[in-house]
View 1 (cartoon, rainbow, N blue to C red):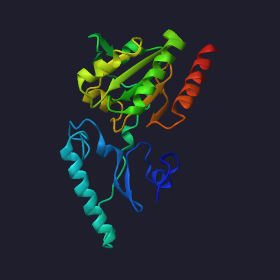
View 2 (view 1 turned 120 degrees about the vertical axis):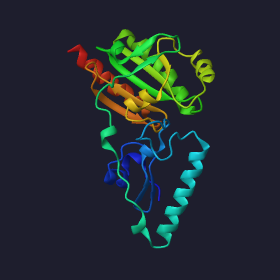
View 3 (view 1 turned 135 degrees about the vertical axis):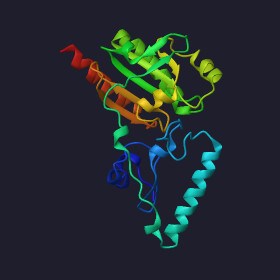
Length: 229
């Protein structure tokens, strides 16, 4: 059975708002928290960092074992999974980075403006079109918005090569584990956050649905109209 993530009864039942999540029948086998890019700290997910091939193999072995239990009628032996709702972001978190130009980049630099934060990777094809679109938005709205693009799981030289052909008005940086965790863990790319002028989370999107840019720009226009009153 296949379900649209945004309309998944299983995801709603378990309170899952991000992806990837893995179910076998109605059993939640792995949560988004398990697949983060950054694997440091005692709260690291079971398969983090996900770009490590050893974690891919570990996931395959665990999934095969869970499927054997379910097919063998031993579903009750599978430990229950829970989603850590405390990791959800409600406002622009505190973070401190150095951008690709060597300048400091922090939440304090962005106060008082609408802020878009995009987590992306050089190996993510949908990310490229979104980064180009974000550059267009920055030119359209000027200093009314700040756009921060944070690369994850990508070699530094590839990040610099790709961003060199994109908008210089975007704040480009490589995400550290601390920055990724500040945003509730980064478990998939692209992941986009939109914050209003007060720093409150206005919307967020995981993945690249066909209407992502349309929905994001509609939400952004709403925030701009709020500031005009």
